[in-house]
Length: 180
Image 1 (cartoon, rainbow, N blue to C red):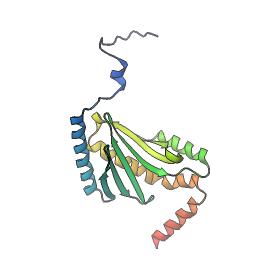
Image 2: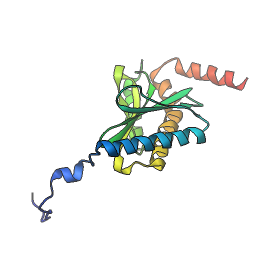
Image 3: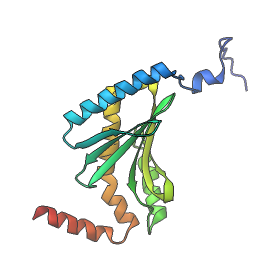
Image 4: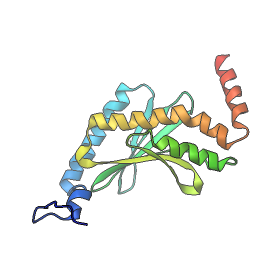
C-alpha cells in the first residue's frame, strides 16, 4: 500500500532500524568512559560493593551491589559494536505457579523503561536490556543501574512467594532476625 510518502534517494530500511556501527578506536574510547563512569559510581554509591572487568577478550564489566531485599544484585554489562547490553539474575526457575509468575513479570515489563524480564539459562528469571552506544552517557548508565537495582529490590520477594511455597516463611524468618 502506497500512502504518498517520498523517501530520499539514498534511503534504505537499514537507515531507520540499525544503530551506528562503532569502529575499534571509538569502542576503545567508550570502554575507557565506562571504566571511568563505573569507577565514579563505585565511590559515590555506598551499596556498590565492587566494580570489575572480565578477564576474557570481550568488553564486559560487573557491578555488585548490596541490597535490602535480595542480599546481592550483580549487573553485567557487555559492550558490543552498536550497543551496551546489561542483565541481572533475579531468581531461579519457579517450582510452582510458573504461569502466574510469568504473567506477573510480563505485565511488569509494560512499566519498565529500558529493561525487560526474560527467561534465561535453566529457565531462571533475568532482567535485561540494551542501549545504543550513541545514547550512552554517565547519566544513562546510572539510570540503568538504578532501574535494575530498584526493580529487583521491589519484586524479589513477591516473585519468590509466587514461585516457591517456602518463600513466605523464609521472608518472615529473615525479617525477624533483622529486627533482633
